[in-house]
Image (cartoon, rainbow over all chains, first blue to last red; front, side):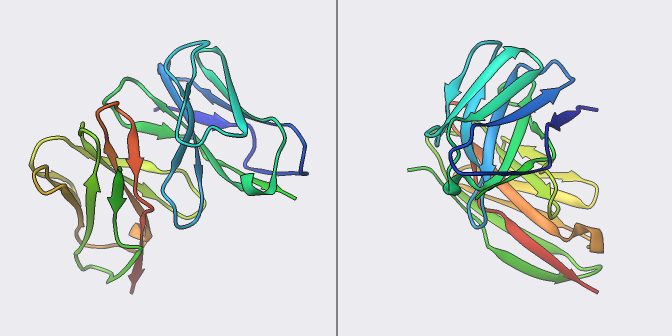
Length: 112
Length: 109
């Protein structure tokens, strides 16, 4: 079974803090994604990566950056957290282009 | 633009059948996914359709009509554990998933 883990289930940070969310997968999948999920909206893609050290912007990259130094690890960074970044953050992995995505348990981030 | 529409909420009775509809508009099309998401949990993959027709997988079936930009998820013999949100996602020409907001399914005894 694919296992995708995220560093925290719940996180509370203050406005202006730098926030790191980490995602680790154990199935050697090439593709990794960061989404945010808000009530009444579909999942929105923040960034994705098809390979080590490679990153692509998704639909809502503003205020975020990512890092992929190793194949199994994909980090999402909020450079200066703001209250409108309060959300559920979901990491996903994918073996190839036309395959299902496997999701981590999510991190519910609250910025106060 | 790209868009996915699905009902916000549906209610059904335990043991019954329910059909959750999804319509999509995307730039190109590389398939339609359905995911299940229980409250507070991660989405889990249910089905993938790329050709027209019905695909059956146990109590769950998924249908696709590419010409109509339409899909549905059919759940039979509903159980209380089927109470969840069901997410429809279409893959566009760039192999990116466009997600619907999800349909919250409430099962009543």
